[in-house]
Image 1 (cartoon, helix red, strand yellow):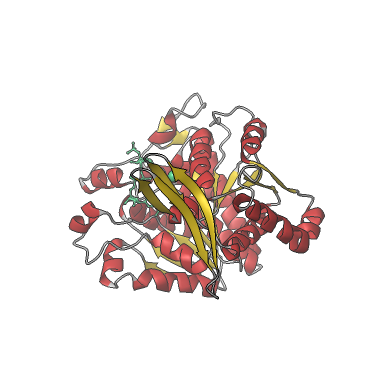
Image 2 (spheres, rainbow, N blue to C red):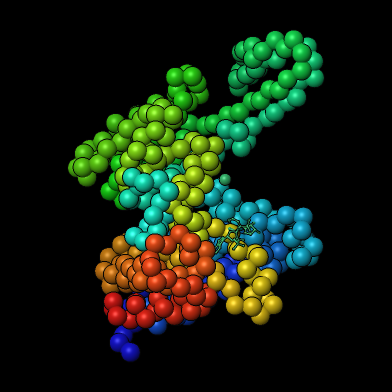
Length: 403
Ligand code: NAP
Ligand code: MG
């Protein structure tokens, strides 16, 4: 074997749960370690370890990403009542993704992996559409109230000097509902900067859409913050790169996205991002083909697959059955992290390897070898479904001939 590629700085590696944990170690053993002298700082975010450390391990992993700038994360269980029993948990630990996102103050960018022989449901789409979702506030941190009958609802704002401002929300004649929500400039500013930086990284246009014609203060603040930051900090960089930033209304954005070829970053408010990322994933084919990266405003990157731990497959795997679980998004989490590490360290060999790994994976599917979930979507004539490990072995074959 020729010499393995050296890495100067480490990647923060976060292991996870269930089927994705199984895939995780196979990807490393088969697709990475034979070619790269893998340098990682390992954190086990598997539920058992989180429980054992009172979830400190998750915080430590996030701090490590701040230090080393690049992380790669396996899917993890977010505990619910059933998991409390299954894993005999001390507490219903919070979502690791939520914890990491809060510490890094980042924005999540999701994009589909495009394979020629898998056609999106939306005909004109040819290039990936990256959804950037603002992950703070709005209805996800709101206060809601059921009004039972005749009532007057007011918004009361008390500033730090004790001055009060009152606004009438509604005079209720009968029962109804009411809600209070908020956002903060600081969070919107980080979101905007993450989006501008990521667009420059990808060399793609940035779209941002909200509903400022109706929401003349709330949504308008989002629009203004994006515009101010763009004018002050990014206009020159965007012009130099030959890319564009623009704001439009959310309904207009949707009409334009559907008619577009793709190939842009679409920044969404929290709720819009929740809905649109599922729409984009489904329209491009499969959740198992969605990549996800958390980017912080000060330039830290955490790569992962957008899907979960594929629990149902794992239970079959534990019974000794061979599953056909799609490893593409997890492979791309690794290639994304390796490429970013290579870019930051000016390690061309590593960047090249990451590109080859992606190419080999896509080529495998284009040549008709895929996991079951893709079989009905692929337009290749002589296609066949393989199991989880067979797919990885097929990728290895193509990787060998590419490097
Ligand atoms: P999931 O793991 O994404 O799986 C849902 C279903 O989608 C699977 O049962 C499977 O359908 C299909 N699927 C997803 N990924 C696939 C892949 N790579 N290959 C083939 N099929 C795939 O979601 P879930 O079952 O709702 O959640 C399971 C666990 O994951 C939960 O504990 C949840 O907390 C966690 N989760 C973690 C993350 C994260 O860490 N980022 C994200 C979401 C969920 P079929 O069974 O029909 O084949
Ligand atoms: Mg959703």
